[in-house]
Image 1 (cartoon, one colour):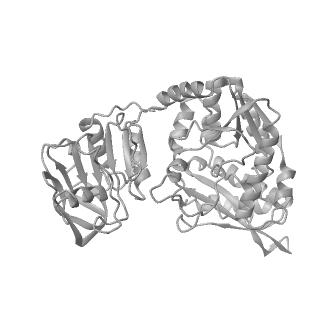
Image 2 (cartoon, rainbow, N blue to C red):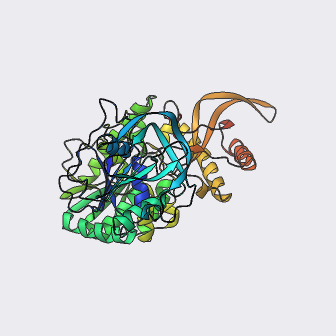
Image 3 (cartoon, rainbow, N blue to C red):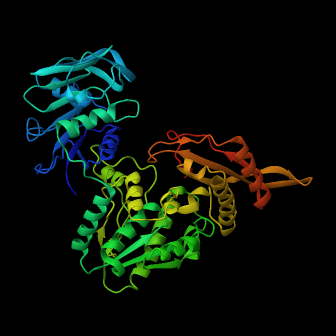
Length: 509
């Protein structure tokens, strides 16, 4: 992959967003911690310094080694980066009398600057800092101001170095994408050649060379990532790819059969394994969410190991790891606190002597879908909502039984089918039902009932990092609630979850 743009991470929550905006310009980029800069920078065309929760005035402020970058490569310093360049290069940064967070407007833009071509006067930008630049670094030239921040943007004469105190990558910076394009394309002259078709061509060639005539085993989940990974590998190595689709008994209703048929129709070499009882046995009496995830993960590895041993001379294990997982593992702050275990992270037991191949490890989720579309994968499959690796086990609060799974499968089917029939499915990022560990009193046909409560959850998001609940029409919720209570035996009450992430997570466990 062409290493066109290097983004240095100083711990900002917006770092991934910078990368996403650069990728939207069809420019390939990578994120590295500020203290782990690649030793070979010869293939990079530009560098972006990100923001940071630190102050440049603090004793523990991040200090990047820019000796091989500054003055040698075009560089854009964002927020912390802009303040760092000023503070340690002859300028001054001090605590601001007026802390600027949120929306601001450019009140001054220097005429004739390529960086601001196509940017409207009074353009809205997004600020997030308590320090402010009081004087520019040596050879600094002011390019833009807001009403409260005089040096909102500057450049350094004699270098291709630009610096801004706001965040162009966030949605609220109206012309932020234009500024990034001006810097990367017009100033740094970075080629815009990172397209789905180019990625497919390059990764297929890379996989052919890396794998050769070896055999690869891949665990399909029915989700977007593993499916796109399978089609890419199938394109590269054909029948040397062995796909295994495990039914853990915790999939959506009829999903094992329907997805298996769909895979076979795609020409994949796939084997379906129904291991439902093995998973139910592993989950018997388990109520703690983390223990559920561990039990399912261990059972899956055992089933997968059993099946892979039936294939002679397998050398590689393919995984649908995507770029956010990779970034997390090399974060400047280290792996974040464990909120919940991830089924793709943590490696394999030592007894599984397989090499790992991850064809999607440099792609974001939306890019995976675009690559899938370029490969001709069914839009319905590519548009599927994310589904948790542990399946319905973490949507059943409490212990897992076959009866509870069947109830939740029926409820989930009514909900998802309803979203599709009302034309709402594609407007929702993820949806599902949760079976609560409580019963409630109800009345059906003049008789008292004491039955299960289910919660419905529908969220909108772009990457799952943050999410907000979807304002589904009242008429739809009324119809779905009525259908669930009338059609699913054992349920007499339906509630709708209106929590955002944060503070709540998308799943309940």
